[in-house]
Length: 364
View 1 (spheres, rainbow, N blue to C red):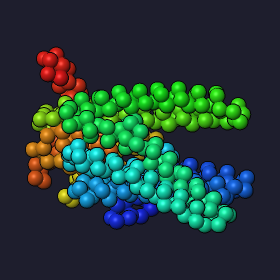
View 2: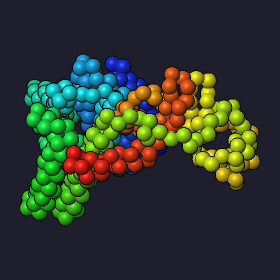
View 3: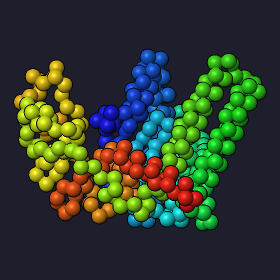
View 4: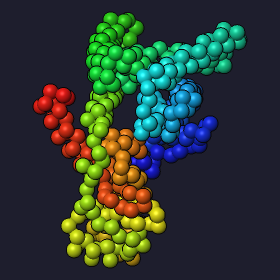
C-alpha cells in the first residue's frame, strides 16, 4: 500500500505524506459532503488536519534543532506522526522537549484563535475561528494525557528515565497508559449513559469512536514496548550472528526466463540483484501462469531497491534501521562487497533466543 500513500511536498525540508487510509477518509468525507450538501463539514475536517499538521511540524522543527533527523510527517485518520530516524539515539531530555512542544503549540494556537473569535463579528468566519480554538485546545490537552503513543506518554517515559533504564521506564509508562485507557473507556460509557440530550444512536457513536481511539492507543503502547524490548536485547550483539547466506545473487538485467533456470538449481527463495553499485531484492517471482507474460522482463522489473548496512555494525543498528525504514530485509556489505542478508524473521529469532538466555541467567 506504500505506493498509494502519496507525498504532497515538503515543508522546511521535511517530507509530508498522506497515508492511504487518510486519503480514503478524505475522499469518503468529500463524497458524503457532496451528497448531503455539507461542504462546510468537509472544510472543517480539512482545517482539523491542518491543525494536526501544525502540531506535528512543531515536533519536527524541535527535533531538527536538537540534531534529530526527521524522515517525514505522515497524516493518518486518527492524527499524525513525525517519523524519526531511529538509528540515532535520543536522550530523555531531548525526547521530552520534542514531545512537549507539540501539545504546547496546539494550546497556544488555540488561544490565539480564541482571542480572534472574541474580537471579530458574529458570522461564518467567527464560527470557523471558534472551531479552530476548540479543536486546537482539545488536541493539545488530549496529547498531554499519559497514554502511549501520545506525547504525554513519551513525556512520562522521559521523566521516568531519570531514575530507570529505557526498558523499565517504557514498561512503567505503558502500565500508566493502560490504566489511563481503562479510565477513559469507563468514563466514556458513564458519559454516554448519564448525560441527557443524547439519543441512542448518538450514545452508540460516542462509545464506538472512543473505543476505536482506545484500541489505537493500546496497540501503539504495545508496539512501543515490544520495539523497546527488541532493541534492548539486540544491544551489544554483533550483526553477523543473525546473518543469512542462503540467497542467490543475479544481475538486475537478467531476464525472467533465465532467472527460472537459475532457481531450479538453487535452494533458496531469496534473490538479490546487483544494479551497478546498488542492490535490489526480488519481492515477487511471477507464477507459472504469469511466466509467458513476464519471461522477457528483467529482474529489475520485479525487484525493489534494498537498504545496505555495514558488516561491522551491531544487531541494534540493524533493528533500528529496519524499524526506521519499515523494511524486512537488509543487504550486509563490507565496503562494497556483499557479505550476506539480514531478514526480520532471523533477527526476531536471535533476539528471542538471547532474551530467553538472559532471563534464564537472571540478567534479563
